[in-house]
Length: 327
Image (cartoon, rainbow, N blue to C red):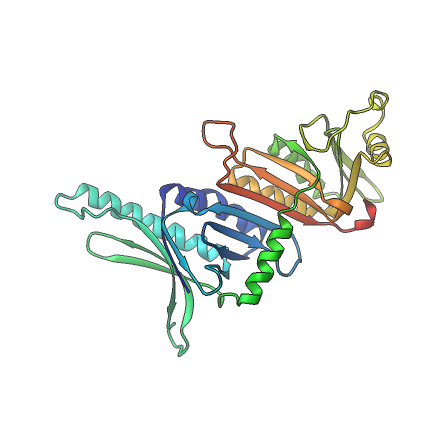
């Protein structure tokens, strides 16, 4: 079982400045899943408890000279602490930057390009007689090499990898209707207020492009409606006689017509999913899975300087519903 690659400058920026800070908000521990052409960071796909977070990168989006081999169809997966991973990467980047500046500024300095290598190794920790697996970062300076080791779990067995792959395949199914929320900050400001009202959030999504959010207690009800958003997938024309109705009435009638679905999710989960804005997506789509199985949030990334989807990067979350019968 072997894995070795060199981080590209784009890969360093994506992980250090964007994705690792965002994914750490989803949960401290995740599975890092490596295949021949993709790298995945996966939260809660095996235990099904809490938010499922799936981020995917084509290998060229992060690495040069990507090498992987295993007896399990060249697939490797292990659990890793994201905060430790981010800390090690950030530390090695600081050293890498310092060495690069030194080498460039010293006559007769090292002519070999300075790079950050990442690989899987087994090492004997201090005071231990059993070798342990690590994900290791290494960069070479003018006269020395610097190494940062991140402890990982024992790599998953063949049967566990197959289970992880099956869960990943299932998690890729998208709702039949997705609506686009272009202003994540507006949504986040509203959910900030909701956190102080209650723990359960009612989410209604219609084929008309309406997103209705409501949190209620015995004393107060707080809601927001985002209307006429862009729709991807199944859509319908909004009835003209609904225009003068309240948001709650519109949502209820749309559901009765079969043009909307409503689920209940944890306010805490919903707020946590919004932390993915740290990955700097260009927009987000919300949808409810068939039979109200979960609330799905899909984050879209554009190729810099364009409005074309960057297909080398993807990120989406699946929020568990509290009351499947409410849909």
